[in-house]
Length: 271
Image (cartoon, rainbow, N blue to C red; front, side, top):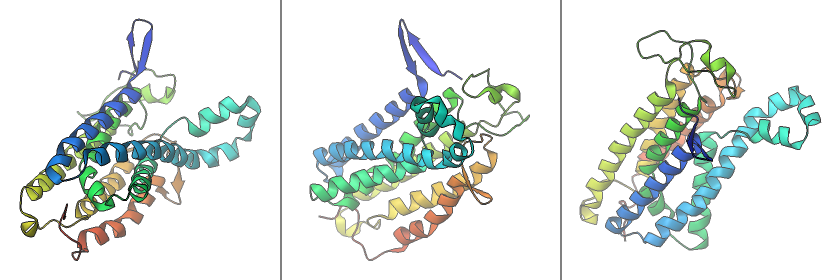
């Protein structure tokens, strides 16, 4: 666990650093793949910029909605000033909100500059789990999104963290690192599928536009639904007996099936 890095008088939060590292690596790889896929490098870069804005807003908004019941129950928070309200209501980020926000930002870019949305989606889909994997490393370093109590050989015992004082009470499942590993596996598989297809002539490509997105959504929804059972933090929000992320994951499965099975679309990066 390493919440911050100190370089002289400069303090760098590891969560933010890992988030930035993952995003930059994803964009660099997207620019590299864009040339092979026949996508404009400018489109690859500027779509990511629009997506980054949407990601930040979406991740913050969904976090706020998960915290809203707590804020309503503890209305005295408002008596402590606007700063306290912002800290409680917008002090974190939720991945699914960031994913939807990124998608919306890319859609806005493609609509405004008349770029093929499915091309950008196919380009960036394998890179989402890569960036997300780094994000979860940041979670592990910061101590957030921690796991349930565990005394197995893979358990970790975090030191005291004033932001999450309950974290150090017992050994815990390193659910953040497990999710990182599963995300990196997903990235590798999706990237291989993409590269294999763009090396073929268009008439020989079996992978259809949007199918990578469907595969990713199906895979991650299943992974996240399972991993939520091993989460120990209390700030995730819930809908009935499901966590917010489990509920969203279940809703995404039909969308994933639609993208996977819609075979009438053209092959990836069809010109």
